[in-house]
Image (tube, rainbow over all chains, first blue to last red; front, side):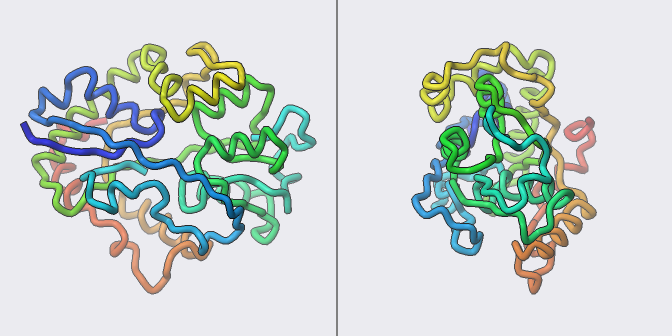
Length: 72
Length: 209
């Protein structure tokens, strides 16, 4: 089995991935799928400037190479 | 979306009013695409509130006049009397690391396609996933809870994965440069590398829609 770690976001966005895992579709393709949830973004500084915000947002698992794939 | 008692019933009255979004995410880009048809760019007043929970709570508390939300937060807001003043849909896609091999990527996509078809055959069967997710369920409970019957299921749209077209890529790039969201010194193809999906797209059995 090929091991793959995927970042999941809100369940509406990641729904096909959750269903594919729970229904055994990944396993049937020879994929052992593991999920790591993206981080919530809570901010104290209510900026109006996009330049002040790191565009990586909650996708740190991908940036840190803990996961091989994510959706956005 | 706006609160039940809000004076806003259409996008044009939101000029200069604070709107909660998450910068550099779908809520940011979609609200710009929606509002620029109604409000001059200089009067679109977006505030970075982060994840949808915090945007929802900022709207409900009155900190902002409106919030850009997605499901299941839209259904929760509507159940609490809130209303949409405009609505849009955006395209989501998978982003793979540079060490993802084509064979693995193709296998993943075959599994995802089967799941997409299964979900589309009976969306209500799978609606418990977004309702029960840990980031949502505790907040929804505070606001009266949510059931499968509260959803407008056509809002949930799932399609087979496929690469962005060259036209989509260029149009989006030009739009983002116009809004000063990308460095115009870098060309569109430098931002998106479709190697893995291009090779898989040649397999017609995988990308038949």
